Amino acid sequence: MLTKGQVVVHESLGDEKHKLKRLVLKGPIARTAQAGQFVAIQVQDSSISSFDPLLRRPISLAGISSENDEITLLYRVQGRGTEILARAKEGEALSIMGPLGHGFSLPEAGELWLVAGGIGIFPLYPLALSALSKGLTVRLFWGGENQSFLESAGLSSWEKLGIPLYLSTLDGSLGQKGLVTEQINDQLRQMSLSSSQIWAAACGPKKMMQAVTEICKNVKVPIEVSLEERMGCAVGACLGCVCTLIDETGAKVHKKVCQDGPVFRGEEVVWDESC
Amino acid sequence: MNPVNLSTQFAGITLRNPLITCSGTYGFGEEYTSYCPLEALGGITLKGITPLPRLGNPVPRLAETPAGLLNAVGLENPGLDEFIQSYLPKIRKLPTAAIANISGFSLEDYVQLARALQKDSGLAALEVNISCPNVKHGGMHFGTDPQSAQEVIAAVKAETDLPVIAKLSPNVTDIVGMARAVQLGGADAISLINTLLGMHIDIYQQRPVLANTFGGLSGPAIRPVAVRMVWQVFQAVDLPIIGMGGITTWQDAVEFMLAGATAISIGTGNFVNPQAPLEILQGIKEYCEERGLASVRDLVGLAHHDR
Image 1 (cartoon, helix red, strand yellow):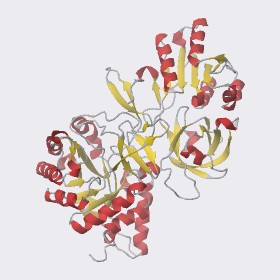
Image 2 (spheres, rainbow over the protein chains, first blue to last red):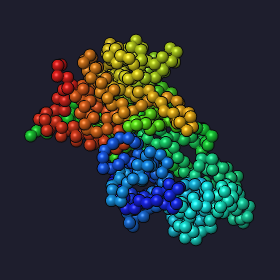
Image 3 (spheres, chains in turn green, orange):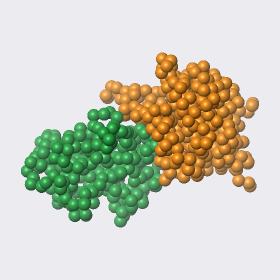
């Protein structure tokens, strides 16, 4: 679907030094969107036609409100495209393709373990809401740079959910010092829960998702991961954003992150291939 | 006022309008249907195929540049057999003309592909991508050597009853020489232009962005080069031209037609605006209406006042 999304809110998220932005857009996308899906948003200044930057930017859905016809995009300003997007003003209409790709699946019962690294936290929030509304138990493992980052990236809204949070920071300023994977291992050791009752969903740096997938494999916990790649068309036509998976026969196959993903089963992903 | 006649015929191909989509940007026809109905398009050019399946290049395969896009997909495709078995039955049912795009690394590759794809396959034409290295001749690209280009086109032409379109590479000193060569080989039409070879270096990582180092540049950045080449070939060679290279707006499309393109093809522009083909078609129509032109064909080559 190609639609115009009207900017309802566009503001800094938390401390400005982290360059995080919150963009709320009004439009019909929320009606059919699922957690883990994304939109391809045009980042040109809408007041004057220009083809530089040329391509749309894929941004995951961080909030889906079908009652209000609103989607929320949370992003970090880190290049020319997001710098231009950051200038979009309230009331402005942005061209959006979406919802795109396949999102996370939800188990029927049991526990959902969410694992996030850095801004990989953003697409997991709507997933947590869906899981909670389905009556599932949800835990969050989240690693970030420091306390200031976690607070800026929405820690308080997670605290409001009243779910167990296992936080890690690289400098130890909040939660446990170190990596998110250490927290997961700690919990697995302490828990009486059978691993067959747990599902996991991860989003973050590739190395983190690879490590978490490895842990999950060892304890036979199914895990879904959300991959990222440079995209061209965002609909599966250009083959720009392929990833390598192992299929049922054990053969290496290419899948399109935009169309077949961005969410894949972790154990199928070939992590070390650059393609 | 009578409506503008949008239909166009060339090289034995009949299209409801002159608007096509470029190979490699439109998959096998099903990817964009929720954005742009195929019924609205004159035709689509399918993703390039090779005799054997190819996994293509590692990622990153894409790099954005000013008003442009570098790609090094590396001809990832399911191969000829899978194309015929799994894709062709669906392609036959598409409500628009489908042009297959074939690529090879030897003359034999092209012969094998052309032999398998005939009129009864339901395709409208074969577009021959000659921008690949000829592995049997030290990697010299078919598309940069007039003799090789002529041979490839002649070989394809001898094997298929479909109209043959030669897609020329702009990475040559003399585009007219290449156009004349494929005309001698028996090409029915010419697609102009394929991507321009380029590269982009990440100055912080201090290495090329693309895993393949080099990639093909497309998008508005290359449009003036494409228009110039369409202009030159129109003057020198009596073959219909499908103009392409950075067409993103209706104004771009009109420019190509004025330069001599009989049909125009949208590639990277689809990524920017998946409804670009619809908007471009509407724009061309209105442009003709405002100038009292009865047919879109009246635009072709109109900027050559001395012709």
